[in-house]
Image 1: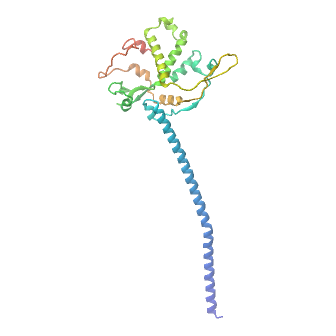
Image 2: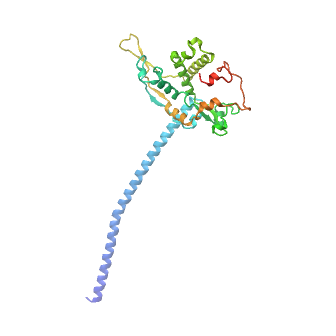
Image 3: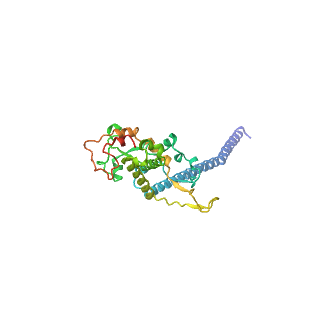
Length: 302
């Protein structure tokens, strides 16, 4: 075989080996690449499934919250509290309320008078920081005329579209606290009035006002939770079981929001507020809760 023929064969062999090598690399690549693609595809699908599941859970929660909010609106008159997304959603609750049990050991609100008890009541009642502000649009939706209702003075710092307002539950608790104090007359009122029959007109009107407020609230909301009865040792008659499960609004969340958004030093501001010359002045309420138009007794707190 000539040198030229041998070189031609060697060239063809190298060419074939080179092609085989390339084919081998291509074959290996074809074996490895589909696995990588498959793993990547599975990873993308898994991420997509997690995203869809998370989105579905979020949407379900949003729809549930919206439906719950709409349901609460259906059984309430308009309140800006709903628009402000305050966390007052219904929670299931079962309190330990017995008929003649040791509730006083469980709840500070029904213990004998003390500074701690008074402080606890003041914290949840309108005696703490009750006043918030609403704007004119919210007032109109409440059926109020912004040109008639009291406007927050400019020095309160809330701008030109602010009107003092209260969340009713804190006033209702204030009234309940007023009647609680009547139970402890000797502690709260005897030093001032002596016997109950010596109480002044304003005190009597305030007490009756509070009784009416609480009755109106109970009748308006008409709790339809069911109380069952049990046989108990030492009793020949059925004993009511007040531990019935119920759904309650998140009072703690509402109280927290109210305190965070309340007018600071509200009672001081309220006592010093002055009637503008252009204010709309309505007739006196009947019966008149106040002893006079600018009662010092009322201002000093009764």
